[in-house]
Length: 189
Image 1 (cartoon, helix red, strand yellow):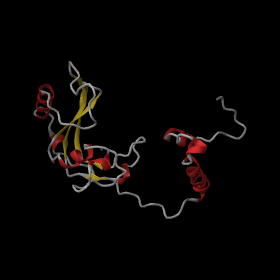
Image 2 (cartoon, one colour):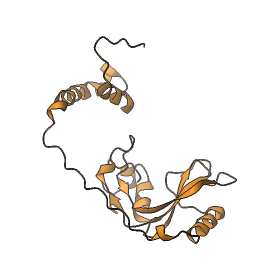
Image 3 (cartoon, helix red, strand yellow):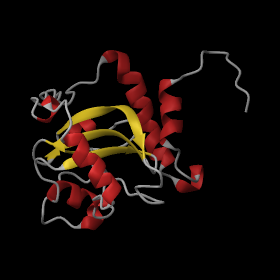
């Protein structure tokens, strides 16, 4: 998965600026079925090796993955390493992008050795089906009507810069709407 996804599905006629750069275009158009993918953590560690298993997808269900909008997706057959492998130096560079082609010979050699070593059954295993996306709600459930009304009243106020200044962060909004304090609770500020 990669984002930003809120601009909608990528198509060849769309400009990179709609997606905050070329990452989405390259992810959607330059990857191909069977390409090797490395799941890195940090600057020099690999946690899994994968093989792309299908075409570019736009999956609206991924519109909020830990606060990230990651609707651009590719199916991948993954094989987690028994232990993360750390290279001697910063294998992915000092400031690696979210998704890029790997040129380092150490990385390429590692991936090739891994793909040619048993077990290899994961490389052709069926990819599980994606869950069916739930349709949008036609009616707000009774138990949620109060909080939805509160949000509808509050959002236009937050957008009034003279009254509130900077808009609140996503964490502040979640805390305000999801973690209400009980009546009479005292909060240190």
